[in-house]
Length: 437
Image (cartoon, rainbow, N blue to C red; front, top):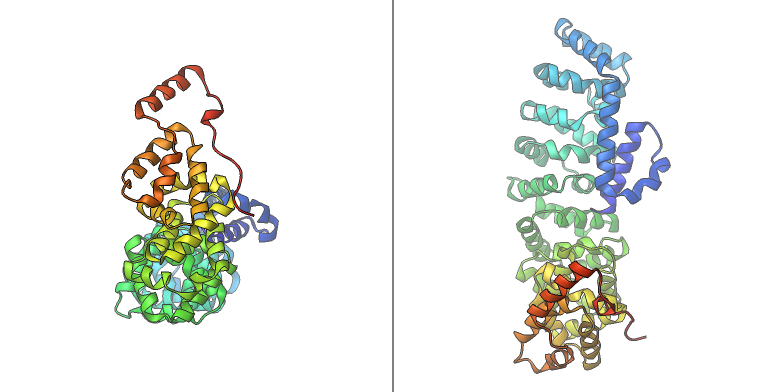
């Protein structure tokens, strides 16, 4: 997940523990998934500690009219306590909880929101009146408290999303809130509904993104990259029909400057052919600095979608683009070259990989062939099969000639030997070294 999601989990954990987020900054290395789990556990522990108090409050609800209790609550009860108690009240008295939403002032309800249990809100969402919810969302976004808004996306019903679509005009705020949300499935569901909603909100959002700050563009790329492939394709078609070559070029540049190149490539993997053609033809991809940034982003632990994005881009580009990307990959390290066959298998892009190698300069092809020839036998079997399917391409002859012959039977025999006798010798290691300056 993106750094924005990780940062949001740090802030939510800090709120749960009543400490400054700076005191928990060292936990960022845990990643969003583990931080989310930690925050959920700590919130459950704190709730259990106050469970008896919340039960007592809940028992009073049927006996005190809300028209009397709510004005008093807003005057004397801190929003943090009200927000946390709302979970128990909402579970025990769902109708009363829904009625309460219309009796609280927008400011007080907004102050309570960071301390609400999103799951409890989810139980009430189908009956919640849209008007006070929209008013609170507008106030949260006015305060730029996007971290608070994010967790509730997972519990928004279609009717509430439609109400927000119609009643919340802040495009930037909605994008930033979605960028801080933990659940990718929820983000995708919301974007899907906005695509199909009566207000046709996505084209307006895309205009806002293209004219917006680098941070907004970074957040938008993070949001759209987390959507389902068909949602990304639909958003991408809108993006490339609205955006000029200059604005798309700026978007690519800002993705690199703000550290979301991996997300940009993941989004690229699901673009339609028309959108990919327009992106690949953009002048920004003729700049070596841009291509270097795309390749460099793939050096770390990156998922197959981002690799697929790079190869889809080369497949829809011209020969010069494929040649330049091949050289840049070769110049990173032999380890990068050695992992290309595995990445092609994971991402399903063998045709694009071999097309890129075939269009590369002769010295790059020779280097790639040398690295691949030194791969372990069991990794070369699949590689050799794909090369054999391209025997008619003379440009790949140097790779085929460099590959020592190996049979599937021999590989299985070696595997059995490894199981019986442990690790083999250096022939099972990968190549090391570099290429170019």
